[in-house]
Length: 93
Image 1 (cartoon, rainbow, N blue to C red):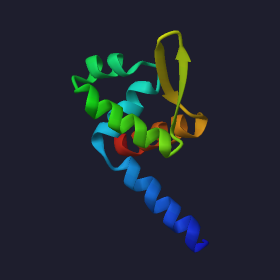
Image 2: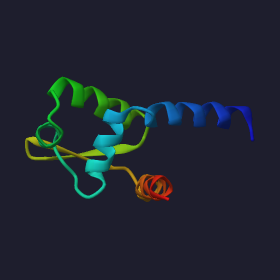
Image 3: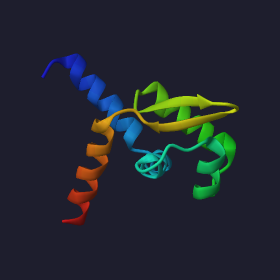
Image 4: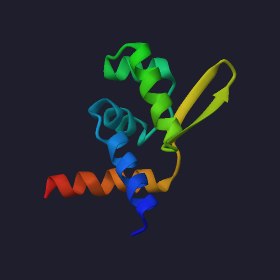
């Protein structure tokens, strides 16, 4: 593997290594949600959720869509769905 790919993979797994970020990704697995909805469902402060969403978005794992006054966050693509699914299956074995 190229050295840059190795560094990028290491950065990716650093992002994925935080339990709060995993909880957010898992929550967004089924539905696009607003920051407030995520805060309520996970019992987290808005600043915490906003910070984690920003990191996930910068890492190209999430995208956001504005609808009126609300911004909805969702997983960026099927790769993220698949990664979560495979990881869960692995842990359940």
